[in-house]
Image 1 (cartoon, rainbow, N blue to C red):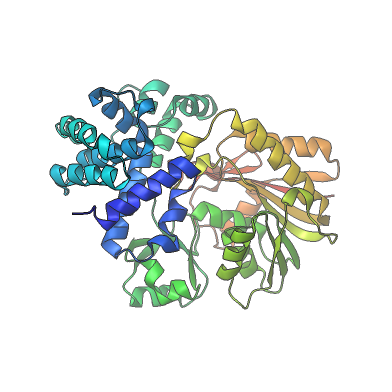
Image 2 (cartoon, rainbow, N blue to C red):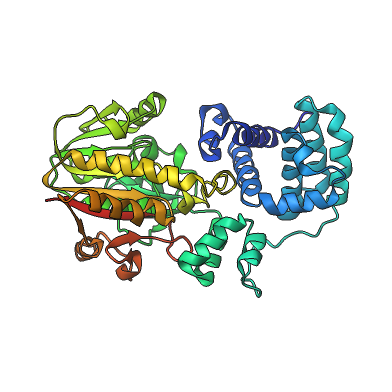
Length: 446
């Protein structure tokens, strides 16, 4: 029998993540897998994200049972081994024999038939490994090495976070990264919650913002409310970045807009504003444009944010720059295996170039929000502080003032606003806050 649709999809996605540096979440929600049944899509998601979250732990165990070094194995073979072992260790409802058989069949399907006996032999050994607990527990031995091993993170990343945040916080970050993040919505319509409930979606209030809801059960993507964009999927930290912008703006520039969640949130806060949403890649710009409802005044522009072909000034500019994404590892676990420490200086230079360009398009008295979903200082404070040194016509505003405004108007519901800041900056930390890790600074043109 051929492998099941769920395991076939998981195998193909993991292979593309490995070979093409694709993002698993984008592939899982692409049209290629839209025909999977709801149970098959759920299993494929579990397998893909589970393998990516626990890759180093899986590889350690495979290495102990393999007669060949892992570096010599074909990607198809290693992925098939990881898939089966993840099921052995973490999915107690799937019989070992089924997981083993299907991984052998996946190897054959990938035209690596000669490796099938090897995969079968390794998995028979691994099938005797005790299952891992589905619930993560706090370590008794807390050190960077212990955290990296137990929570399947690269040691270099854990060590740099330890220097920045301390061991106690780092363990919470890594614990969070290994858990399944909730589906969080931003309600765009006063009727959205009622519509979703009527369609069988169970919701609870968000933790940070009054407009946010967390999904307890149900497939939001199949609802009329979602298809009509009355409710959109968006992490609460991402929602908070847009909320910092506030209302009252007429001309808005979003320098790095795709996939468009923050752009749309700013448009909802400023319904009369004309918004220019910039995206460097044409296919992403087209996808983003399709997301925007027809009644919004959002114009999409394909351009490099470092050299914007725009002459006019704006009174609000958002520079939500491309970054390492280390604040989103629960959603994008492949990042931790792909990112290298030597990537950070290059990211810093690109981000600084975007911030310079964004500031050049800011009207006197206008505001610029610089943000990332990174935990790394090189991409956050260092970029802002260098831009301030170079630009005497820029001043740094205190995010705490804006959070106080959001709290007083009922937009921000988080009971401890000071914990969301580090000095004048917004700083959310996964595991400390119930959301992704985001950074933001508010600059003003003098």
